[in-house]
Length: 90
Image (tube, rainbow, N blue to C red; front, side, top):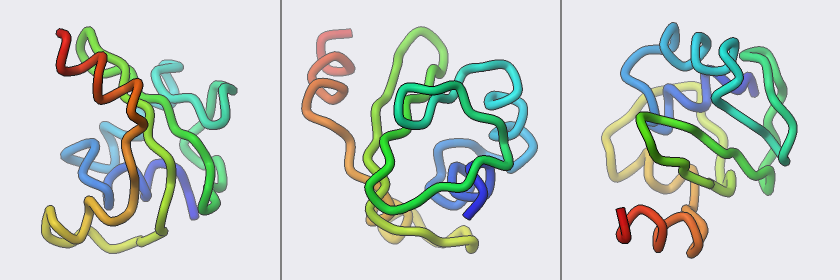
């Protein structure tokens, strides 16, 4: 599955175009490597997003090309404990 489609389906970005732009600008890393929008994602990959001033680290738990409701989107990933703690501190 394409990275930009997954980021959109997981509701990390409002549009797929914004997800692709973030990847093009180097704000998205997959397994600690800068990723382009067409990068293929697999279950178990680690995605690091820089949005605003914060960095979110997500582990891919599911793949979906369809954008569904927020509770369904949250099943596609799991945020790491370190990432969650850093967000709460900020």
